[in-house]
Each structure stands twice: as structure tokens, then as C-alpha cells.
Length: 273
Image (tube, rainbow, N blue to C red; front, side, top):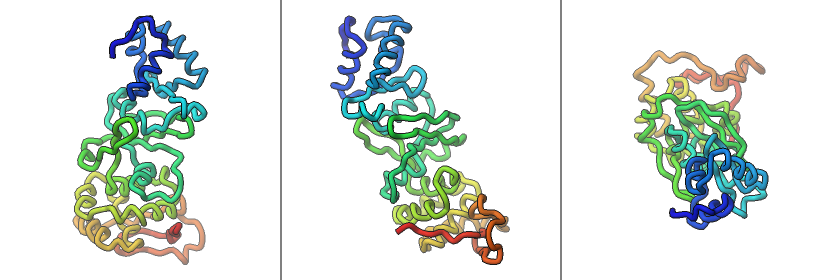
């Protein structure tokens, strides 16, 4: 974009919005405006005070359109792809946010959950919190990450199969076992057995056991059978807890020991209809 060097930062931001863009870097803006980095930072600070500019990461800026001024930032799906390209790391939007995008959420998701191979701190973005979850071997998941269209372009999102595994791998971020089972009750309708099994080697055996138990419990027989066939190669299975935070709590005489998955169930999942 050819710009008049006399443009102010405010005019630069307006020009970006008029061309359908909402993000820019510190260096891009300083060069376009013909100012020094300290000069740009002073101007940016003024725009941030006016809530017209959002700075989620060092050197990366998001213009706040007028309709989102009261929020303090546009929705994360407007800029997450650009943000992660700025960071230089692969990523995908996952967990409960991905489940919501697949139509499998019964309530508004407050965290915008992103999986990447770099440990990044969470940050508040207007009415949302962008939270990051670490996964070292992102290359193993390449075939299970899909493009999802957004208002400003696209973003990378976990497939239904990958989302299901992640709900158990990062169970602490997905809620209690009732909420996970509730999401799976809807998500399971979109999961294909072949794709589920193909993805299983990328996950810990304990994750597969817990997911398999829940799929059985929710009557997704074809999915459960496919996963169990994969696990049969690694028998004998160790006994594991369905929920680690319930270990040893309550009346142990009511505990169930599921022989198929070797899962100890201290609380039967309850589905939110």
C-alpha cells in the first residue's frame, strides 16, 4: 500500500481498516509513516489510551474497529492467524473453542484456546482471554488441522477428531468430566472412526483410554470399537483414573472399574441436555 509519509498513525489505522486489514507490526508502521521507532511508540501509546489500538504481543498491533471500541479489542479470530505468523510458530485453535466452531458447545466459551509449540502466556483480549497450550510435536498433527474462514481471512482449527483427543489431553482446560462428556455427545456425531484411529498414535495411551471409555459411555460404538482395536496392540493396559482430581474421594464402594478400558470411574458423567 502506497502511503503519504505525512500520514498520522490514526490515518494509517483508518487506511488499514478501509482495506480490510486490522493488524500491523511496529516496524511496518514506523516505515510507512517515516518515523523513528520511539516516535511510533509514543503515537501508539496515545492510540492505546483511546482504546483504538490493541497490543497483544511485542511489536504486534491490532486496530480496534469502531464497533468494538467498548470491548477493547476485536474477536481473536480476526487476528490469531496473523499473530501466530508474527510469532513464527505453527498453531491451531482447539479444545472448547474448536468444539464450539464444530457446533458442539452448550454455552459461550470465554477462553479462546490455541495450541502451539511455544510456551506463551495468556492475555486478555477485550471480552476474551486468549490462552495457549503447549504441544511439542505439532508436525504429527498436520493432517488433522483444517482451515476455517473468518471475517478477516482464515485461521487454523483442530478437526473434530483432534478436538476430541485434546479435550482429554488438556482436561484441566476443558472443564469437569460432565462438561467434557456433554461436548463429546455432540462432537461424536462428526467424528470418523478411520481418522480417529489414524490420529491415536500422536496421543498418550491414557488419553486414548479415557476417550474410549467416554465414547463407549455415550454409545458411539463404532468410534469406541475403532479406538479399542488400536489399544489391543498395547495390552495389558494399566488401570487409570477417569478423573485425577476425584481419586480416593467419596464412597469407594460405588466406584466402577471398567474392564474394557481399565478406567476407574468414581463419578458417572452427567450430560447437560
